[in-house]
Structures are given as C-alpha cells and as structure tokens.
Length: 116
Length: 113
Image (cartoon, rainbow over all chains, first blue to last red; front, side, top):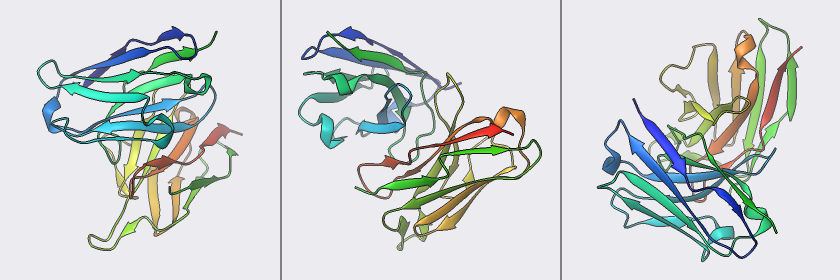
C-alpha cells in the first residue's frame, strides 16, 4: 500500500525557517516525480514545487522561488521542502504528493503556521 | 499562468439527482501532438487530503465509482456525478497540468439539498 507521511510542520516566526519531510513507502520511490501542494486555512489548493526522479530537475511557483528548496533522498525514500524567509502568507497545510502532472497519491498534510 | 475558473462556487443537489461542476481554463489545455486534455479533477472531503478522481479529462482513477464522469475538451470541462450519494459531499477541484505552474480551480462545494 502506498503511504506518504509528512513531518516537520509547526509554528514559526516571520522570517524563520522550517524543514518539511515526507517519507514514502509501498512503491518504487525513485521512479516518481514528487510534488508539494499547500492549502491555506479555508482556501483552495496551490502547487508549490516538484522534483524529478533523480533530483536533477526542480521547479517552484514564483511566490516561493529563492526561499523554498525541494530535495529528495532515493536511498531513504523521502522528499523534503526547506522553507526559509517565511511569511504570514506561507501559513498552510502542506501536502506531499506523487507525480508532476495529475497528482495520484496525497499525504495527510503537515501544518505550517507563520506568526509572531 | 493558466487560470482555472470553476462554476458554481457551491451547489446543493438532492440525493439521487445529478450534480454538475464546470471548469474553464484561460487557454486550451488540449495538447495537439497527443490529442489529450491535460486536466484532472479532485475530491476533497472535510479533514482529508484531496483524492484524484479523473485525469486526462475523462479517465477515472482506480477505485473511483462510475457515477463520476469527466467530459469536455480544449478549455471547457465538466465533472458530472450521475446520482448523488451522501458520501459525495465534498469540495471538487479541477487542475491543469498542460503547463507549469500547474494550477487549480478555486473549488466547488457540493452539498445535499
């Protein structure tokens, strides 16, 4: 069974940093693009970043370019999102998902709250 | 960026009746070289992550009941639930993956009348 389990969310002050991680199991992780999608409280879905199978291609939504970094470890079957220079409008539930086009499997989400 | 616009924002339908959600993209998401529409639909129930329902505009994902049907082409798409069940109460999103960044519609909330 495919499982994606995130960790690393929490409360952080504006300008601070967090590192989100997503542990994958139940499929051949190194065969898949991975993506992060976020959802602000009560709002819709926003794609944030994705990474190709070997980590050599990475793409970001404009609003996080230069602040967020996506990476993966195909030995540990995990994908991470480093969040720097956090702003209040980065507050959201962050989902780890499989794929780069349609997003097949979604984790339950990890909550990031940016507030002083 | 391609803008996805759904209508209506919310919808109330009686059990057993048909529910229809519309989605329009600001440009065509039909890729001529493979004749595929790069359009997906998701269902999000309260407190849960989204679930992929439909991809390539009309292909149901594994395990999705056949009362869910995706249709349309180019820039105009429809998700139809043929006979609404209580468990279909959710927010539905369309999403284009024709070009980066992938973008979602604002969501349509479906309730029971």
